Amino acid sequence: MRRRDFFTSSAAGLALSASSAAAQMQGELRITALETDLLRFPPGRPEYDAVHRFGDHRGGVVLRLKTNAGHTGWAYSSFGMVEGGPEVLQAILEKEIKPLVVGQDPAFPKLLRKKIWNILEYHGVQGIAHFAIGATDMAVWDILAKAAGLPLYKMLGAAHDRMPVYSMCGWYYEGDSDLSIYRKAIEDRLAEGFRAIKVKTGRGSFGEDMQRLRAAREIAGPTVRIMVDANQGLNRNEALRRGRAYQDEGCFWYEEPMPPHEKDGYAMLAQELDIRIATGENEYTKYEFLELLKRDAADVLQPDNRRAGGVTEWMEIAALADAFGVEIASHGGGPANLHMLLAMPNAIYMETGSLKGNSQYLEALRMRDGAVLAPEAPGMGSDMRPDWIAKYKVG
Image (cartoon, rainbow, N blue to C red):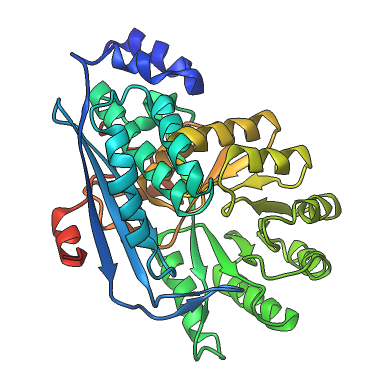
């Protein structure tokens, strides 16, 4: 692509339509196949947040959309705690979505999304049905970026060449009354080069959580940013009480202290506290995020690209946030989140556990000075290692 053509494409930003990218492609693209792999992982060491236990039921679904031009669009959805979730997602993709997308032109992701939505809304517009919409949408955009010969973030219109990243490392662990496992997890992530970390709160008493937070600060030192995540574990009064304490401790943000339906409660916290209020990982559509924005109920929105419907809906949510002067961070990591964050001027952080945990992808993410560097290969960088899939594939 010529330099002039590239800047013309990039300047379009979010307004870039998939059909304009199609003009750069040779011939007419068609989706010729939809393939899925069901994965099951062995149980891991149990980890807890305020209300959930993770590690017993771990699985995922790999999605591949193939085209007549030889492009393959990839998407991956993992489940950390829901037994049966991957099987349901695979069934929706194979039985409901495959007939809708095979034979279609991938240059119209919004049209494809609408067709799928019109069918799946019968199952409900939230939950695993929306996971299926998100996976399909991500695979379609991966095809488009590969066909255009661009990394996805440049096709969407680049806003950054790197993205700050933080590690979610401070879980609750069984048999960890002395916090030795907790401390070791934080030390390991700092040794990887992270300059921001997140720790769980809200499961223990106020005093216990303050002990955990102060231990994290002792390990991390004064310059590392610390976020706290209460995972819906608190009521309004307790959320406000703890928020004031976290604010006094210098935490960077205070995440999801209450259930997602408590939008008026979030508005109260945002008004009463100076610490950033972050939420959104359990919202599914731009309409729910708009309710948060209209109430001034969040300083940082955290859409999950699986729940929030893939690239198309995620980018619309991020653009809404930008219009309201609200920042964006991803819930979760991986290449899809990275590309979308790189395309939004209001994006501030990508979440991950350990970057070593992204080893299933052919293209490794690279971190320097606490930020993940923008990749340059065409597509989304979500192509997965065949040996990794074969190791965990069911059947």
